[in-house]
Length: 233
Image 1: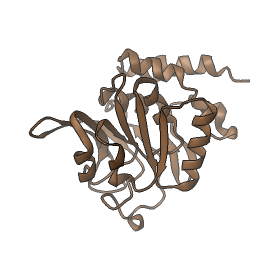
Image 2: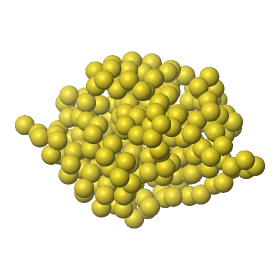
Image 3: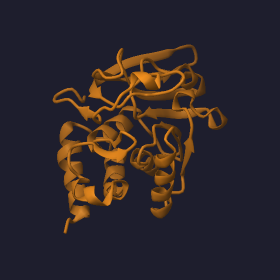
């Protein structure tokens, strides 16, 4: 029988800290959230492998290191309000919720919405709310957000997100010219007058589908995201 606590500690040390992720809040959050609870029972033995895993609807639970890298990149701080785009299993939202004050997560697949809500409820994670809808439009009713994190890659940063970002807020998302190409994680920081952009490293994600993303017809089945060797920092 797998000792998940031991496996989780190994994951943090070997897959995350040794890749250069050093924010103590991020490392503590990754140690706290049980990834095995967010995958199917038949896949739990692989919960702490350095890989994404399928969760249905042609979606994946992200590789642990990519979750940690994105939360570190967005510089998430205690008490902040977060928009999490692409709920999927709910795992990334749960990790963010350990640090943040409130996480609003949005997912277009009804089945994943219900599954994520049930897992979060079972784990007693009360500062995440999961909504069904078009993630490219954000959730204007809860804006402004201190941080926006997207678990899918789009052709550009959606305009709605920029409008829903607080001054001093940050966006982390994958951006690319093709729904199936390798992308770079893009960081957007909002100042009083402008938006500052920077690039972090090459990744591969499922496509961001929606009104201000990729049309459904352009996005066939795709393997999950991954950090390419030497490109995650």
